[in-house]
Every structure is written in C-alpha cells, then in structure tokens.
Amino acid sequence: MKTFVIGIALACVAMGIATNAYAVPPNEVLRIETNQTFTGACCSSLGETVTITEPKMVVPVTVTFSTDYRASGNGLIGISVNGHPCATEQNFFTFAPADGTFRSLNYEWVVAPADGLVRGNNTIAVCGGLGFGGGSITFGFNTLAVRISK
Amino acid sequence: MIPISKPGRSEVTRTTAAGIKLGLLCSSLICLVMLLTPTASAVAGKELLRVEQNQAFQGICCFSWPESVQVTEPSKVMPVVVTWSTDYQATGPFLVGLSVNGKPCKFFGSASIQPFGPGDGSGPFESRYFQWNILPGDGLRRGNNTFTLCGGATLSSSAVILLGFNTLSVRTTK
Image (cartoon, rainbow over all chains, first blue to last red; front, side, top):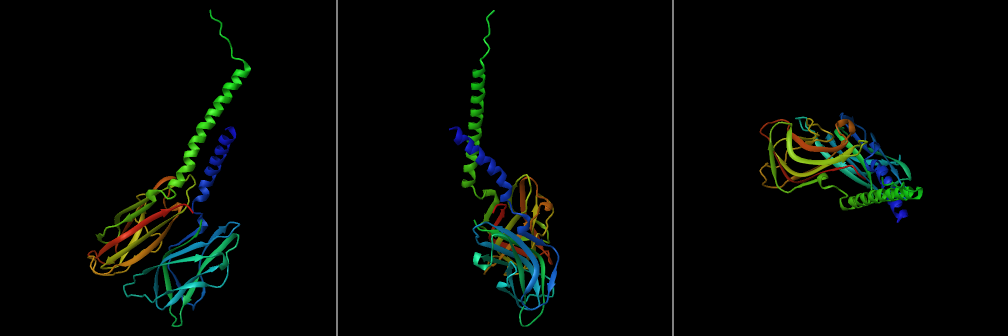
C-alpha cells in the first residue's frame, strides 16, 4: 500500500513538471507582421523557419503555413526539411486586384520520417518562388507552425 | 488530581506515521483524480466551438463577432495556436482577427476574406481557414484566457459577410 501511495505521488510530481512541456514551445510557431516581396523563380528559401525536437523514435510532424498574399504571377510554395531541397510544393495563383486587397492562403504539409526528419532538433523552412511567367509574390501577415504527431 | 499519562515514544512515532500515511493517501487520491481527468478531457470543451447556423455581419472593421474560445495557461505562459475554419459569402472584402482577453481587435496572421457570392445565403459558399499564433506578449496570462473573433469590412460599410458553418479552436498541448 505504502509503495503504491508513494508511486502515485511521484507520478503526480512528474505530471506537474511535465505540464509546462506540453505547451507549444516558442520555436515551433512563427508570426510575421510585415509584408515581404519575393521575385525569384522557384525554388529558394523564403526566410521563414520553425524548429521541432524529435524523440528517439522519429515520428511525423504537421507543418501549417497561413498567409495573406498578392501575386503578379503563378508559383509554388513548399518546405525544406533540415536543409534538403525544397519539396512538396503547392500552387499559388495570380491575385493582384487594383484595390490593394490581399487574399488568404493556407497550406498544410505532413512530413514523414523518411522526408529527412532526424532525432533531436529539426529545422523546417518555407521555400518556393515564381513559375515560368515570372512576376512577384508579396506575403502579408502570416504564421508558420509545426506540430509533432502523438 | 488525576495523573495524566504522557504518551510513550513508540506511541508518538506511531501517531506521526499514521498522520503521514493518511496525508499521502489523501494526496494520492487527489492525484489519481488528476491523472484520470486528462483522459476524459484531452481537449477541454471550452477550447472548441462549432457553429452550425449562418450569421451575417455588416460594418467597417473592426467589431466583435460573437464566437469565443478559452484556454487555461500554466504558470509559465506559452504561445497558443488559434484556428478558424469557415464557409462564407461576402459582398466586399473583409478582415478577421482576434480580441485576446478583451483587448482591441488585432490581426495575428492572415486576415483577408475576399468577396464571394451574394451574401444572402443563396448559391454556393467559399471556404477559408486561418491559423493565428498568439504569443505571451500579446496579452496572454496565467489561468483563463479568452479569444473572441472580430473583424469587419475594409472598403464599404454596407458590405455584408455571411458566415456559414464554422469551427474555432485553440490549443496549447501537443
């Protein structure tokens, strides 16, 4: 009985300490509140990065990128995992109305261990660029987040 | 005078031990309840909202839209991620953001909603998804935190936005 009671008490102490670790660590989220314009052809880094720590047994992560944008051409946006080439690109399309308004876009990528995730620290960067027609894309306010799967 | 007998050393030890045991037992029972609680509510109900009726709003940005979620922050306040996914029709461009703990409406990421449809519910709806990362410096505090949708039209006060079915959620946990 005594051992059981002490065991439960210890579990509770561990749980109390672990509570803070469950919250979203700051390096897993990024928020940009300035407009940024890119003109190059796909694909290069677009200057936004998040990091996440993988456990011993590497598990998939989900990356979400939510942004306002204006673009004078079509292009692609993807992610680079730990410096690997830009991959899993998705399209964006020309959007440049005269009233100056932006459009919102949301992308979600599921990154598997085979995509280059490693035990410990992992860096995920947004990459992309314009298509053959050229032009530019301007990101408005945007957020990037990475989340590990349970 | 009735002589008072002092308790023996072994009796005191026995009493103290019993007290500790009782204390540990009570603490354990409380902890057991705590251990079981997260299983029952991995995501607290107040962290999620689903609206299943159309709602129309009209006016220049920014005013409160009656959709809120809440989250409890630990003693060391950490970032949270709020997501909003909605169907809509809009007769003009709109912006949508959040009010954190009653503070003025602010944009914590993408905010733009482009015109789509007649705004009266007839015909198709467009869908939009927003993710907003809220940092401790944005007004988060230990304990209960409330996030309320807000927004409005950007160009015309007569523009109408009709929200269809939508969900709002906030998460702090992995």
